[in-house]
Length: 207
Image (cartoon, rainbow, N blue to C red; front, side, top):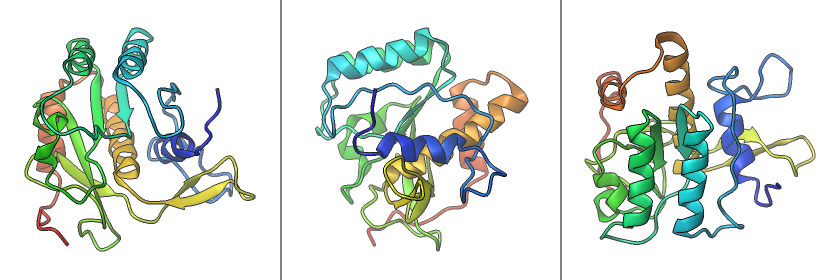
């Protein structure tokens, strides 16, 4: 298995890169275990492959599924994929999804309307909506997603800066991993309530 674009490597580094090694980055939850699953061929995937990836993660014991990808088709929902996500949720697996990078209201995309998913938008260094991030009242939480330094297997120093809601999603997955490590299994509703209760409000206006 290889990561041709480096996207998965960058995301995994945000979640769980080892720290205290003078390499320049540390993951949000450096003791977390990563289960890398390749569902995309370069930048494309189909529902059947994504369903297999989600089921594999659940059946192999994942506690959190970090989905640093967004569904490009507008409403209505992809029923096959929705059933796979519900399978994960029924098993108590927390599913964190990127809101997408089209600078649109996220309610145009069905995943944002699924009440038990955690949908993440991106902010910049000034805690404003990051350029390109989708936005809207259906966002669960925002997190850093602009000029984020993380791992890159292809670069000379092993690091690269990237932007997007994928990076923001990884920050949230890492934070949830820390919470579960301390408090154990927690219903997704309680996780969502905690995220919202401990976040500050930023405008959903397009910037």
